[in-house]
Every structure is written in structure tokens, then in C-alpha cells.
Image 1 (cartoon, rainbow, N blue to C red):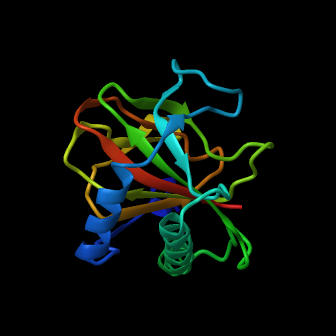
Image 2 (image 1 turned 60 degrees about the vertical axis):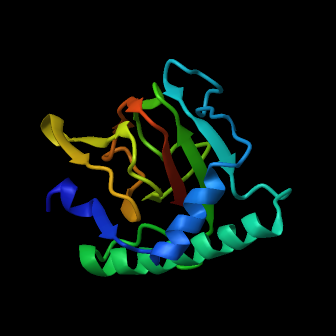
Length: 186
């Protein structure tokens, strides 16, 4: 089985009203500079983050945390069915770490994998809130330099294994602002 067969894209996963509401909310959040496992390094990652799992959230953001947790859990079950995998990428009772990422013009993330000893992630999720920006495509660099590009598409969800076989990058945004919800099954 080819590695790219485990990168799955689900389109139109929210009702338009829900996606529009989330799109409006993310534009008014207070973001922090995102770090990597080793700390803040804007030569590796130039993006801003809003951690949904932090406890000091408004009721609106608690709603979105619960809603997105539920949605990711539902789509993880669909993912297991469409990949026809007997391998369990995560426990059925897995919890999700969720973040909203904001990539302004010039924002990027160098090649990386999502699993590390310090953060043992098993399955990764990228939900594209908007697509009214330029650049910012998601690329996977798979075996033998096989590059799989995921074009941005509003209201779509990409799911893939978090392990070392799935190094990926976000190319620099050249115009506008890219908003995504990212999550990992832990």
C-alpha cells in the first residue's frame, strides 16, 4: 500500500453557516507566536497559535472545542473505514489536542513530523477554515521524494498518520491570511 493512500481529504464537513461563524470568530482571537518542540524558532515555523485546550476560554470557545472534538472523533472513525486499516492509529477513547493556527503573509512551517517523544501523537488533522489567501499549501514529502500537495479548500479536513513516514510542510503564505484548526489524537 502506498503511503499517500493514508492521506485522506474530506470536503464540506461543516454546514456553510458553521464554517462562516468559525471564520468570523478566528479573525478576532488573541494569538501567540507558535513554538516547536525545542521552543520558538521563526526560522522553522512562522505562525501564530490559539490553543483551544487551554482552560481560560470563553463559553463560545468551549463550545467550539467540544464541537471540533466531536467532529474530529467522527471523522477519525470514517478515516479508519476508508483506509481499510487493521492498524489502530489511536485508542478509541483518544483525546485531541486542538489549536487554531494563523499564517499571515510570509507565514510558513518547515518540514516536520507531528509525533515526538515529548508529544506522542498518532493521527493528525488539518481543517481549512478559509481559502481566500495565496500560497500556504500543505505538502507531504513521502518515500523517494514523492511530494503530495494538498491544495487549500475551504471547509475541508485532511487526516494522516502523525509518524515519521509523513513529513510535511506549509509553504509560505504570499497574500492574505490562512486559518486552520489543527489537531492530534493523543
